[in-house]
Image 1 (cartoon, rainbow, N blue to C red):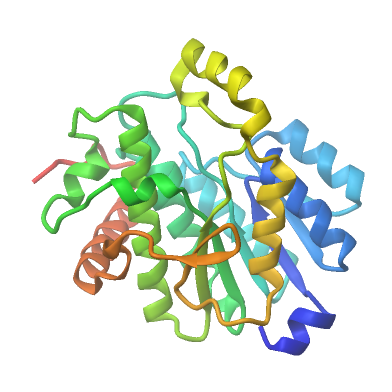
Image 2 (tube, one colour):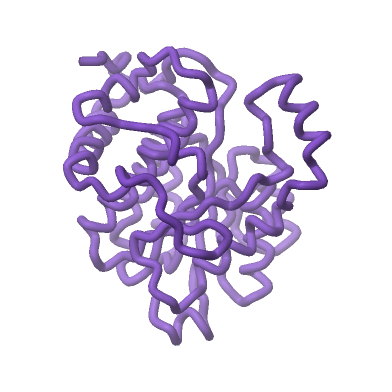
Length: 284
């Protein structure tokens, strides 16, 4: 977006993960600023409630189902001719274990492959716009090496839930930058929203619930995370391929900018999405 567009006419903003938390708060903020917001959530009731509250369009998607991602993209193409900002905010650690119906490890699909598929399907509508993705600082402790990305998608790792999530977020960041290289007409950036009270410790069961209660006074609110998303969605400052923490550029993983790894992950994503539903991914 140009400086004029960012400052005076926000245009159309699609926010995924808008059922609650950061996504819902960002939808409210951008709506107040005059954007046409399309809220996309996994939970139909919560998404309808937010859409009704703001008088906006509300759509649903399950990123653990690639056919549903195609359905969402089709619905968006019918709804708008252009998207100025895709706020790729959806993600998390799904409760399902084993492979999805598409044959992919669930955390990898929900955080990396599903959002990548939506982004690529919407690329023609995003020309001249931007993609702002919600990442996680945990990605800096993860690692992907060339030749092992298929195993990551298959879930053959024995890693903890947190490490599987961190690796998926790293893969998502690499794919985002590869998307930017292949679509130079679209600006891409991602950010760590903070340790948010709404989701802190959710993958740790009863221990996470206890930690969340004890740590709540020190956690950021969904509104704090939304402020950071909205800033990247609307700023006229250069943000291309940058990773942000608390509104400041941060180093992130060096692997985010590895073009060879990006090309390998891209080829894997194309394979997985072209053949979804044909059985489990086989690690090499």
